[in-house]
Amino acid sequence: MPNRPRVWLVDGIGTTPDPTDQPAVRDTWLRTWLPGTDGTYHTADGRHHATWAELHARCDLVEVA
Image (cartoon, rainbow, N blue to C red; front, side, top):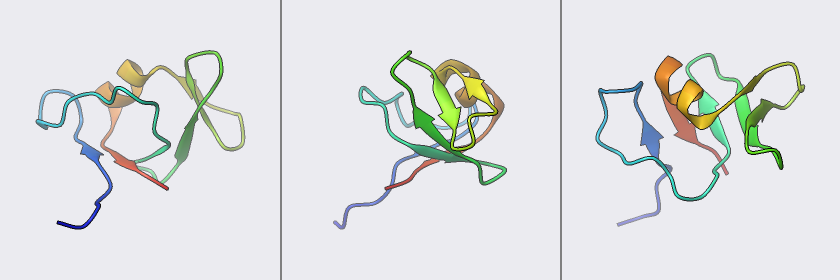
């Protein structure tokens, strides 16, 4: 089976467990979120900040390379 990006559907819908690593992800609005050294995720432009739980509760997420 080829390597495929992981997908997390909005909280409560999907079955993919939360990641144990901190992958970069893209949300429903095509914003890329990068893990920061402070334990939160940030958009590339630095204008938005959220924890994994907040992101997962608000939108679908797809892992990006």
